[in-house]
Image (tube, rainbow, N blue to C red; front, top):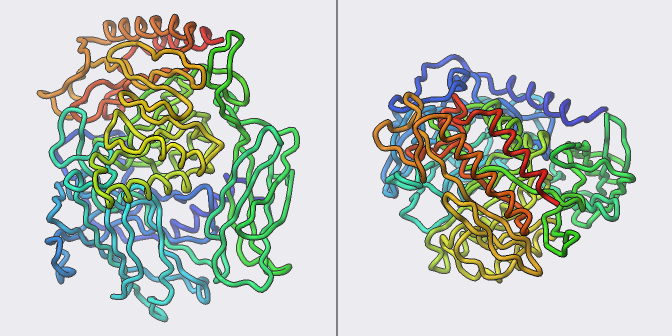
Length: 593
């Protein structure tokens, strides 16, 4: 059987949509703010129908996105008897596309409920309920029985719900969530209860896809696939659950549908998969191999998942003058791109569609950017799938926890930091982990950087982007508005400009708040803001000669009242003259050694 990534995802999509089909039901987005052009493509019958986990694809699944019963109660109250409202999952209740459009307060608890029926073909298998992300404290019940609980606003999780299922007929799933937003000390990025300035509307509850899948008792739980370009290997470690008499793992790499390498080993033990004369992944040539992983019991295959990988290496390398530079596959390459916050006027934390999610990356590639800094937010896995396919380098921030003062707050932060690395380690697009932003909740920096380096030696680490550098990690990172500027060149780390720019332009009819918008520096029209953007990038050129390795421009889009975007918040237009902006971007790469 061919298992090209495209065919695996296509098959999963067809099965998932077929299982999750719902009767047409009334739903209307909440009003009050602008929406994107993709909002018209959202309906209860079609809401994020794509298979949500491209790095571990199973053929059979059931999408539970769509209309759920919804209620808001007091935090300590029991499950309501009357839910009273409908919400469109996976959009948070604060968003327009949820159909709710209201603030969830720390004294609230939100409740979700829906029913489903399992296909007969799943009989005899374990049934897993998966959640892409739910913010923040979640408890799940099936047919009245508690099946599990989870804390964390950004990481995927799931439970085996088999023992709570009825023999046949309708099954009920209920999800209870409490989210204090900025009244708690948990990681929450830029979410606040009172948005304004550089802080934005919160996201509570379910905000990524919910789905079911059948799996055997002995099954693959997860895998880690780390490329070793120097030794022409893919290092694969597979975690398995359940009991098998003679468990073995078989790993196969494919290119153009043909197996190019295979290896076997034990679950939990690293398997070295040779990749001879590898085709390397880079922004200019984002080649991806397909991956098939099978769990065997003796000679019998009991579980199989599909995925992909990219062979690429990231490092700090000295140029001919002895200055540290960022390198991809041992080639020094200047990195330029935007601060990317991942907010949407209609979905808040959740893009309206997969096409919208992809569009932001396509826009940046078209403008000539080869990198972005994903700012204090972790995206759904399909975002990184598109970055892998399109060839975008990503500096991935850990979402900020602004307190981090108590042992509980620090445990929450470190747990989610570990999960971020474990959950997204297979994506070649991610090349750097950013532990802290501008001192927000910063503590024990050397210890946490060392922890990240041990969890993932294959990537670079930025200890703190801007402000509070503690001379650890792989880069020294400063912020300068509007800038540009650079830190002093060091003997052991590369110098980067983690934020600059912030050029603001309000476009009437395309802003969140016509009367209250702001930018670091404000302009009146496309020509003047383009002139300044081109001038900023011209001023980056001499800094590159002095040793600057990367520059991050603020930002991809406007976000709520902040109008510093290359695009308007609704993605309706680019604020720059695109041809001039693209020409200016191209010059920064030519200036690099």
